[in-house]
Image (cartoon, rainbow, N blue to C red):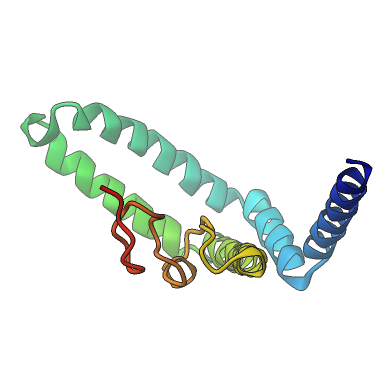
Length: 149
């Protein structure tokens, strides 16, 4: 029982060390830098506030769907605001850095999972990594062909 506890503490120490390495990585530094620039950019903050307000209005309209009198107008405004948000430099740079950070975390999670077992489920937002296993877990009838009845 004592051995299991020592092993567990060593694993937790390794995990903490890995976390520190991730935090100190170039990818994490770029993520923090882009986040800071986006937060400091007044136009970016204005676009975000505008989008949040439109999104709230859109959610109200969605309760009635296409039967709401403002449905087409609000839907169009949300799409336009989203496009402007996505194309604005500091926001686009942050989203790219965020995607790179998520990709790194997905890759690390997959490597750890595969080190334990090829059949372990590793939740990621990246279809590339999900496809390395059955992608939905046993019982889902995923690519691995497993299915429970």
